[in-house]
Length: 392
Image (cartoon, rainbow, N blue to C red; front, side, top):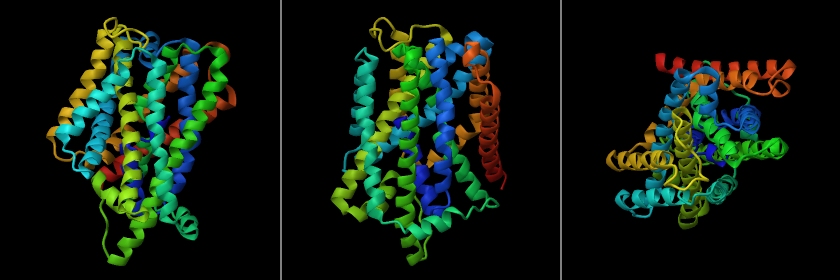
Protein backbone atom coordinates (compact mmCIF):
# COMPACT_ATOMS: atom_id res chain seq x y z
CA UNK A 1 0.00 0.00 0.00
CA UNK A 2 2.98 2.35 0.49
CA UNK A 3 3.61 2.02 -3.24
CA UNK A 4 0.23 3.65 -3.89
CA UNK A 5 1.82 6.99 -3.01
CA UNK A 6 4.32 6.98 -5.85
CA UNK A 7 6.15 9.89 -7.46
CA UNK A 8 3.22 10.53 -9.77
CA UNK A 9 0.90 10.73 -6.77
CA UNK A 10 3.22 13.22 -5.07
CA UNK A 11 3.32 15.43 -8.15
CA UNK A 12 -0.47 15.19 -8.52
CA UNK A 13 -1.05 16.09 -4.87
CA UNK A 14 1.38 19.01 -5.09
CA UNK A 15 -0.30 20.30 -8.25
CA UNK A 16 -3.68 19.96 -6.54
CA UNK A 17 -2.52 22.02 -3.59
CA UNK A 18 -0.85 24.77 -5.57
CA UNK A 19 -3.67 25.18 -8.08
CA UNK A 20 -6.70 24.72 -5.84
CA UNK A 21 -5.50 25.18 -2.28
CA UNK A 22 -7.34 22.75 0.00
CA UNK A 23 -10.30 22.20 -2.33
CA UNK A 24 -9.14 18.71 -3.29
CA UNK A 25 -8.26 17.70 0.27
CA UNK A 26 -11.67 16.20 1.00
CA UNK A 27 -11.29 13.94 -2.04
CA UNK A 28 -8.16 12.38 -0.50
CA UNK A 29 -10.18 11.39 2.57
CA UNK A 30 -13.17 10.13 0.57
CA UNK A 31 -10.83 7.89 -1.40
CA UNK A 32 -9.63 6.08 1.76
CA UNK A 33 -12.63 3.70 2.11
CA UNK A 34 -12.92 3.37 -1.68
CA UNK A 35 -9.27 2.34 -1.95
CA UNK A 36 -9.81 -0.17 0.85
CA UNK A 37 -12.89 -1.68 -0.82
CA UNK A 38 -10.98 -2.16 -4.07
CA UNK A 39 -7.83 -3.63 -2.54
CA UNK A 40 -9.78 -5.80 -0.07
CA UNK A 41 -11.37 -7.55 -3.02
CA UNK A 42 -7.90 -8.41 -4.31
CA UNK A 43 -7.04 -9.74 -0.85
CA UNK A 44 -10.13 -11.94 -0.83
CA UNK A 45 -9.47 -13.23 -4.34
CA UNK A 46 -5.81 -13.94 -3.62
CA UNK A 47 -6.46 -15.74 -0.33
CA UNK A 48 -9.31 -17.96 -1.48
CA UNK A 49 -8.23 -18.76 -5.04
CA UNK A 50 -4.45 -18.87 -4.57
CA UNK A 51 -4.07 -17.33 -8.03
CA UNK A 52 -2.91 -13.96 -9.29
CA UNK A 53 -5.20 -11.47 -10.98
CA UNK A 54 -4.13 -12.20 -14.56
CA UNK A 55 -4.30 -15.97 -14.07
CA UNK A 56 -7.77 -15.72 -12.53
CA UNK A 57 -9.07 -13.59 -15.42
CA UNK A 58 -7.62 -16.11 -17.89
CA UNK A 59 -9.23 -19.07 -16.15
CA UNK A 60 -12.57 -17.30 -15.64
CA UNK A 61 -13.04 -15.40 -18.89
CA UNK A 62 -10.51 -16.81 -21.37
CA UNK A 63 -7.12 -15.86 -22.77
CA UNK A 64 -8.37 -12.98 -24.95
CA UNK A 65 -9.79 -11.07 -21.99
CA UNK A 66 -6.70 -11.93 -19.94
CA UNK A 67 -4.38 -10.48 -22.60
CA UNK A 68 -6.58 -7.39 -22.82
CA UNK A 69 -6.31 -6.87 -19.07
CA UNK A 70 -2.55 -7.42 -19.01
CA UNK A 71 -2.13 -5.04 -21.97
CA UNK A 72 -3.75 -2.34 -19.87
CA UNK A 73 -1.46 -3.33 -17.03
CA UNK A 74 1.57 -2.95 -19.31
CA UNK A 75 0.55 0.59 -20.27
CA UNK A 76 -0.09 1.56 -16.65
CA UNK A 77 3.16 -0.02 -15.42
CA UNK A 78 5.17 1.70 -18.15
CA UNK A 79 3.71 5.07 -17.20
CA UNK A 80 4.39 4.38 -13.53
CA UNK A 81 8.00 3.38 -14.15
CA UNK A 82 8.69 6.55 -16.12
CA UNK A 83 7.29 8.56 -13.21
CA UNK A 84 9.23 6.69 -10.53
CA UNK A 85 12.63 6.81 -12.27
CA UNK A 86 12.08 10.44 -13.28
CA UNK A 87 11.64 11.18 -9.60
CA UNK A 88 14.81 9.29 -8.68
CA UNK A 89 16.75 11.10 -11.42
CA UNK A 90 15.31 14.43 -10.30
CA UNK A 91 16.51 13.89 -6.74
CA UNK A 92 19.96 12.97 -8.03
CA UNK A 93 20.12 16.21 -10.00
CA UNK A 94 19.29 18.18 -6.85
CA UNK A 95 22.63 16.99 -5.50
CA UNK A 96 24.54 17.41 -8.75
CA UNK A 97 24.43 13.71 -9.68
CA UNK A 98 23.84 13.28 -13.45
CA UNK A 99 21.26 10.85 -14.74
CA UNK A 100 24.05 8.79 -16.27
CA UNK A 101 25.05 7.90 -12.69
CA UNK A 102 21.77 7.94 -10.74
CA UNK A 103 19.74 5.82 -13.17
CA UNK A 104 22.21 2.91 -13.45
CA UNK A 105 22.49 2.90 -9.66
CA UNK A 106 18.70 2.76 -9.36
CA UNK A 107 18.52 -0.08 -11.90
CA UNK A 108 21.17 -2.13 -10.10
CA UNK A 109 19.44 -1.53 -6.76
CA UNK A 110 16.00 -2.51 -8.03
CA UNK A 111 17.22 -5.66 -9.76
CA UNK A 112 19.41 -6.69 -6.80
CA UNK A 113 16.48 -6.40 -4.38
CA UNK A 114 14.30 -8.74 -6.45
CA UNK A 115 17.07 -11.26 -7.25
CA UNK A 116 17.14 -12.40 -3.61
CA UNK A 117 14.81 -15.26 -4.49
CA UNK A 118 12.56 -14.62 -1.47
CA UNK A 119 9.28 -12.73 -1.40
CA UNK A 120 9.71 -12.01 2.30
CA UNK A 121 13.06 -10.27 1.82
CA UNK A 122 11.73 -8.25 -1.12
CA UNK A 123 8.69 -7.21 0.91
CA UNK A 124 10.66 -6.17 3.99
CA UNK A 125 13.16 -4.19 1.93
CA UNK A 126 10.37 -2.40 0.07
CA UNK A 127 8.57 -1.54 3.30
CA UNK A 128 11.77 -0.16 4.82
CA UNK A 129 12.34 2.02 1.76
CA UNK A 130 8.71 3.10 1.63
CA UNK A 131 8.73 4.31 5.23
CA UNK A 132 10.81 7.30 4.11
CA UNK A 133 7.54 8.66 2.71
CA UNK A 134 6.67 9.64 6.28
CA UNK A 135 9.03 12.56 5.68
CA UNK A 136 6.13 14.36 4.01
CA UNK A 137 4.34 14.58 7.35
CA UNK A 138 7.26 16.66 8.61
CA UNK A 139 7.05 18.93 5.57
CA UNK A 140 3.29 19.42 6.05
CA UNK A 141 3.68 20.19 9.75
CA UNK A 142 6.48 22.68 9.11
CA UNK A 143 4.37 24.46 6.47
CA UNK A 144 1.98 25.63 9.22
CA UNK A 145 -1.37 25.37 7.37
CA UNK A 146 -4.18 27.74 8.34
CA UNK A 147 -6.89 25.51 9.84
CA UNK A 148 -9.60 28.04 9.00
CA UNK A 149 -8.54 28.08 5.35
CA UNK A 150 -8.45 24.28 5.31
CA UNK A 151 -12.05 24.03 6.53
CA UNK A 152 -13.36 26.85 4.32
CA UNK A 153 -11.72 25.75 1.09
CA UNK A 154 -12.51 22.07 1.62
CA UNK A 155 -16.20 22.96 1.34
CA UNK A 156 -15.70 24.95 -1.87
CA UNK A 157 -16.06 22.47 -4.74
CA UNK A 158 -15.92 24.10 -8.22
CA UNK A 159 -17.52 21.24 -10.15
CA UNK A 160 -18.13 23.48 -13.15
CA UNK A 161 -14.41 24.06 -13.74
CA UNK A 162 -12.83 21.60 -16.19
CA UNK A 163 -9.32 22.21 -14.81
CA UNK A 164 -10.60 21.13 -11.41
CA UNK A 165 -12.29 18.06 -12.90
CA UNK A 166 -9.03 17.13 -14.64
CA UNK A 167 -7.25 17.09 -11.29
CA UNK A 168 -10.14 15.13 -9.75
CA UNK A 169 -9.60 12.47 -12.42
CA UNK A 170 -5.83 12.61 -11.92
CA UNK A 171 -6.20 12.13 -8.16
CA UNK A 172 -8.52 9.16 -8.61
CA UNK A 173 -6.07 7.65 -11.11
CA UNK A 174 -3.22 8.32 -8.69
CA UNK A 175 -4.96 6.33 -5.95
CA UNK A 176 -6.70 3.41 -7.68
CA UNK A 177 -4.14 2.02 -10.11
CA UNK A 178 -4.22 -1.15 -12.25
CA UNK A 179 -0.78 -2.31 -11.15
CA UNK A 180 -1.78 -2.08 -7.48
CA UNK A 181 -4.64 -4.53 -8.06
CA UNK A 182 -2.45 -6.97 -10.00
CA UNK A 183 0.39 -6.69 -7.51
CA UNK A 184 -1.53 -7.25 -4.30
CA UNK A 185 -3.41 -10.30 -5.50
CA UNK A 186 -0.28 -11.84 -7.00
CA UNK A 187 1.74 -11.06 -3.88
CA UNK A 188 -0.84 -12.75 -1.67
CA UNK A 189 -0.80 -15.80 -3.93
CA UNK A 190 3.02 -15.84 -3.90
CA UNK A 191 3.06 -15.64 -0.09
CA UNK A 192 0.55 -18.51 -0.04
CA UNK A 193 -1.71 -16.81 2.45
CA UNK A 194 -4.55 -19.02 3.67
CA UNK A 195 -8.09 -18.26 4.91
CA UNK A 196 -6.85 -17.93 8.48
CA UNK A 197 -4.72 -14.98 7.36
CA UNK A 198 -7.67 -13.04 5.90
CA UNK A 199 -8.30 -10.85 8.96
CA UNK A 200 -4.66 -9.83 9.27
CA UNK A 201 -4.45 -9.14 5.52
CA UNK A 202 -7.54 -6.95 5.73
CA UNK A 203 -6.07 -4.95 8.62
CA UNK A 204 -2.82 -4.62 6.68
CA UNK A 205 -4.75 -3.22 3.73
CA UNK A 206 -6.94 -0.90 5.84
CA UNK A 207 -3.96 0.63 7.66
CA UNK A 208 -2.12 0.96 4.37
CA UNK A 209 -5.08 2.72 2.74
CA UNK A 210 -5.18 5.27 5.57
CA UNK A 211 -1.43 5.85 5.57
CA UNK A 212 -1.02 6.26 1.81
CA UNK A 213 -3.89 8.76 1.60
CA UNK A 214 -2.65 10.73 4.60
CA UNK A 215 0.72 11.04 2.86
CA UNK A 216 -0.98 12.43 -0.25
CA UNK A 217 -2.98 14.79 1.96
CA UNK A 218 0.25 15.93 3.64
CA UNK A 219 1.83 16.80 0.29
CA UNK A 220 -1.30 18.68 -0.79
CA UNK A 221 -1.44 20.60 2.49
CA UNK A 222 2.24 21.53 2.30
CA UNK A 223 1.86 22.76 -1.28
CA UNK A 224 -1.31 24.71 -0.50
CA UNK A 225 0.14 26.29 2.64
CA UNK A 226 3.45 27.38 1.11
CA UNK A 227 2.84 27.94 -2.59
CA UNK A 228 -0.67 29.37 -2.65
CA UNK A 229 0.26 32.07 -0.16
CA UNK A 230 3.54 32.96 -1.88
CA UNK A 231 1.94 33.05 -5.33
CA UNK A 232 -0.83 35.32 -4.09
CA UNK A 233 1.75 37.71 -2.66
CA UNK A 234 3.77 37.74 -5.90
CA UNK A 235 0.76 37.82 -8.21
CA UNK A 236 2.02 34.70 -10.00
CA UNK A 237 0.49 31.35 -10.82
CA UNK A 238 3.09 28.78 -9.75
CA UNK A 239 3.89 25.79 -11.92
CA UNK A 240 5.27 22.54 -10.61
CA UNK A 241 6.61 20.53 -13.51
CA UNK A 242 9.71 18.92 -12.01
CA UNK A 243 10.80 17.32 -8.78
CA UNK A 244 13.31 20.14 -8.38
CA UNK A 245 10.59 22.79 -8.52
CA UNK A 246 8.52 20.97 -5.93
CA UNK A 247 11.55 20.63 -3.68
CA UNK A 248 12.49 24.30 -4.03
CA UNK A 249 8.93 25.29 -3.19
CA UNK A 250 8.34 23.04 -0.19
CA UNK A 251 11.70 22.71 1.52
CA UNK A 252 12.39 26.34 2.58
CA UNK A 253 10.06 25.88 5.56
CA UNK A 254 12.61 23.45 7.00
CA UNK A 255 15.74 25.20 5.82
CA UNK A 256 17.48 24.41 2.56
CA UNK A 257 19.77 21.59 3.67
CA UNK A 258 17.42 19.78 6.07
CA UNK A 259 14.37 20.45 3.93
CA UNK A 260 15.98 19.08 0.81
CA UNK A 261 17.19 15.98 2.66
CA UNK A 262 13.74 15.29 4.12
CA UNK A 263 12.00 15.86 0.80
CA UNK A 264 14.55 13.71 -1.08
CA UNK A 265 14.07 10.84 1.37
CA UNK A 266 10.32 10.96 0.80
CA UNK A 267 10.56 11.02 -3.00
CA UNK A 268 13.20 8.27 -3.12
CA UNK A 269 11.14 6.11 -0.78
CA UNK A 270 8.04 6.64 -2.88
CA UNK A 271 9.79 6.15 -6.21
CA UNK A 272 11.77 3.04 -5.36
CA UNK A 273 9.02 1.11 -3.58
CA UNK A 274 6.56 1.93 -6.38
CA UNK A 275 9.12 0.93 -9.03
CA UNK A 276 9.48 -2.47 -7.37
CA UNK A 277 5.73 -2.96 -7.14
CA UNK A 278 4.85 -1.71 -10.65
CA UNK A 279 7.55 -3.82 -12.32
CA UNK A 280 6.71 -6.93 -10.32
CA UNK A 281 3.02 -6.45 -11.08
CA UNK A 282 3.79 -6.48 -14.81
CA UNK A 283 6.13 -9.48 -14.53
CA UNK A 284 3.53 -11.40 -12.52
CA UNK A 285 0.71 -10.43 -14.88
CA UNK A 286 2.62 -11.49 -17.99
CA UNK A 287 3.68 -14.75 -16.34
CA UNK A 288 0.15 -15.55 -15.18
CA UNK A 289 -1.45 -14.95 -18.57
CA UNK A 290 1.26 -16.68 -20.60
CA UNK A 291 1.63 -19.64 -18.25
CA UNK A 292 5.35 -19.14 -17.54
CA UNK A 293 6.73 -19.70 -14.04
CA UNK A 294 6.24 -16.58 -11.93
CA UNK A 295 7.29 -16.54 -8.30
CA UNK A 296 9.83 -14.74 -6.16
CA UNK A 297 10.33 -18.00 -4.31
CA UNK A 298 11.91 -19.51 -7.42
CA UNK A 299 15.58 -19.08 -8.28
CA UNK A 300 16.15 -16.68 -11.19
CA UNK A 301 17.35 -19.58 -13.35
CA UNK A 302 14.11 -21.43 -12.64
CA UNK A 303 11.91 -18.48 -13.65
CA UNK A 304 13.97 -16.72 -16.29
CA UNK A 305 10.90 -15.30 -18.05
CA UNK A 306 9.55 -13.75 -14.84
CA UNK A 307 12.82 -12.19 -13.67
CA UNK A 308 13.70 -11.22 -17.23
CA UNK A 309 10.39 -9.35 -17.65
CA UNK A 310 11.05 -7.46 -14.44
CA UNK A 311 14.59 -6.53 -15.48
CA UNK A 312 13.54 -5.45 -18.98
CA UNK A 313 10.83 -3.20 -17.53
CA UNK A 314 13.30 -1.51 -15.17
CA UNK A 315 16.11 -1.11 -17.73
CA UNK A 316 13.81 0.14 -20.52
CA UNK A 317 12.27 2.78 -18.25
CA UNK A 318 15.72 3.95 -17.15
CA UNK A 319 16.90 4.27 -20.77
CA UNK A 320 13.87 6.37 -21.73
CA UNK A 321 14.21 8.63 -18.69
CA UNK A 322 17.92 9.02 -19.46
CA UNK A 323 17.27 10.12 -23.04
CA UNK A 324 14.22 12.37 -22.66
CA UNK A 325 15.00 15.60 -20.77
CA UNK A 326 11.92 15.84 -18.56
CA UNK A 327 9.20 13.26 -18.07
CA UNK A 328 7.87 14.43 -14.72
CA UNK A 329 5.55 16.81 -16.56
CA UNK A 330 3.75 13.71 -17.90
CA UNK A 331 2.74 12.60 -14.41
CA UNK A 332 -0.73 14.12 -14.45
CA UNK A 333 -1.40 12.61 -17.87
CA UNK A 334 -0.31 9.20 -16.58
CA UNK A 335 -2.73 9.45 -13.66
CA UNK A 336 -5.58 10.53 -15.95
CA UNK A 337 -4.76 7.55 -18.20
CA UNK A 338 -5.14 5.33 -15.13
CA UNK A 339 -8.51 6.96 -14.45
CA UNK A 340 -9.70 6.23 -17.99
CA UNK A 341 -8.74 2.55 -17.55
CA UNK A 342 -10.74 2.15 -14.33
CA UNK A 343 -13.98 0.85 -15.94
CA UNK A 344 -12.06 -2.09 -17.45
CA UNK A 345 -9.94 -2.76 -14.36
CA UNK A 346 -12.69 -2.43 -11.76
CA UNK A 347 -15.16 -4.23 -14.02
CA UNK A 348 -12.94 -7.33 -14.05
CA UNK A 349 -12.38 -7.05 -10.29
CA UNK A 350 -16.11 -6.90 -9.55
CA UNK A 351 -16.90 -9.72 -11.99
CA UNK A 352 -14.29 -11.97 -10.38
CA UNK A 353 -15.65 -11.15 -6.92
CA UNK A 354 -19.09 -12.46 -7.85
CA UNK A 355 -17.93 -15.38 -9.96
CA UNK A 356 -14.51 -16.77 -8.98
CA UNK A 357 -14.84 -16.90 -5.18
CA UNK A 358 -16.45 -19.73 -3.20
CA UNK A 359 -20.23 -19.06 -2.94
CA UNK A 360 -20.11 -18.05 0.73
CA UNK A 361 -17.38 -15.46 0.07
CA UNK A 362 -18.73 -13.83 -3.08
CA UNK A 363 -20.07 -10.31 -3.03
CA UNK A 364 -23.73 -10.56 -2.14
CA UNK A 365 -26.62 -8.78 -0.49
CA UNK A 366 -26.38 -5.13 0.53
CA UNK A 367 -22.57 -5.09 0.39
CA UNK A 368 -22.63 -6.20 -3.23
CA UNK A 369 -25.00 -3.33 -4.04
CA UNK A 370 -22.84 -0.81 -2.13
CA UNK A 371 -19.66 -1.99 -3.89
CA UNK A 372 -21.34 -1.89 -7.31
CA UNK A 373 -22.64 1.65 -6.75
CA UNK A 374 -19.30 2.83 -5.34
CA UNK A 375 -17.25 1.45 -8.21
CA UNK A 376 -19.71 2.82 -10.77
CA UNK A 377 -19.58 6.29 -9.23
CA UNK A 378 -15.78 6.26 -9.07
CA UNK A 379 -15.46 5.15 -12.70
CA UNK A 380 -18.04 7.70 -13.82
CA UNK A 381 -16.36 10.56 -11.97
CA UNK A 382 -12.92 9.57 -13.27
CA UNK A 383 -14.07 9.31 -16.88
CA UNK A 384 -16.20 12.45 -16.64
CA UNK A 385 -13.31 14.49 -15.28
CA UNK A 386 -10.95 13.17 -17.93
CA UNK A 387 -13.26 13.63 -20.91
CA UNK A 388 -14.62 17.01 -19.80
CA UNK A 389 -11.14 18.46 -19.52
CA UNK A 390 -10.01 16.98 -22.84
CA UNK A 391 -13.05 18.36 -24.69
CA UNK A 392 -12.60 21.85 -23.27
